Image (tube, rainbow, N blue to C red; front, side, top):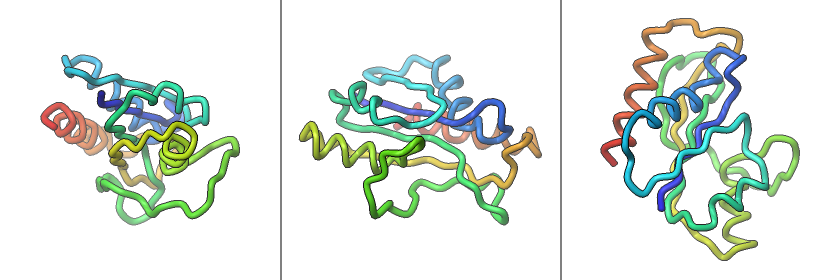
Length: 138
């Protein structure tokens, strides 16, 4: 089963990107796909991912210069951090180590320097549409 997790804060402008992609995907009929919308990634989320063979994380990444650019991967985290906010790689490490589950995983991020408001609604919607359409087809 494929699981798509969109996370972010709808009260913080462009940080809602992952949530908005999930809203768009909910309108489509995606076969054998579970959609999860969350404020942040948490260790407990691993329990919802035990049957996943593919996990896709969708979020916003801070970048001052490349607003509305899309990226498909982020630098890997070197340590296992179980604090208030954890990285996608930590979720994958927990699945690998605790549950012997080794799913494929991908990260889709929209670069943004605005976590107060959506600076360009047209460009923002275009990013949501591009990622949604790509995930529908894959």
